[in-house]
Image 1 (cartoon, rainbow, N blue to C red):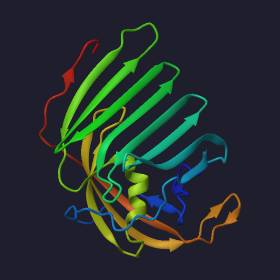
Image 2: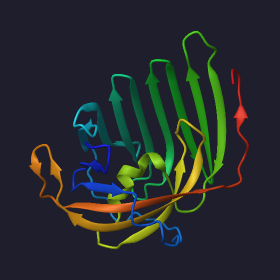
Image 3: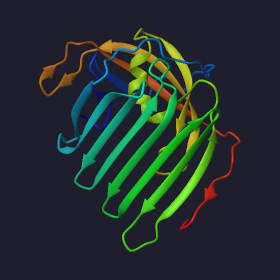
Image 4: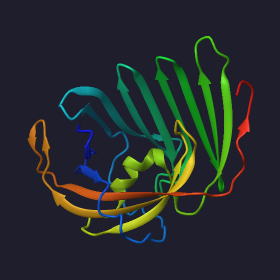
Length: 231
């Protein structure tokens, strides 16, 4: 996989993401964007991440599992320096989030992030463990607006929109289980075109779609972060 122009082999055709094409357009009103669910429970996709020199820098895996009537959308990325595992539990029809988790393991320690959605509030707990230091814990709370999805489900969410040239839609994205400060953004999508791409096995003929994405940060009122023992 090339780092420039993200290519995601996600089963029913690939998705190519680019940052161009939306800079001069007005923001659209947000809406729920799930149109159809294209996958089956148990789907798993593995891929290799290459840099611009075609050198292997890591690997990734996407999984879709069923759990207590919900869907668990999981991602796992790793290279020699870190291991990053995350998942979001979502409603199987709307993909609205129920909870999420992420565990990042590196040379300096482990960061665990747990996310729980309740009504219009998301609670995010970060637990940082580093050898020779006291464990650090912090809890943040965020307001959850209408038409919101967890950013951890993005790679799955984008597969559910109509793949039609010039289709456009906007939704709210909850960047919860992130290393830095959690925030809520407005994401605008536009389907640009269908095209052929080259993959290691040769030109793909499954019909890849290229679409543009714009992210605009929103500042929303919410409960201030709560620092716990060790912070």
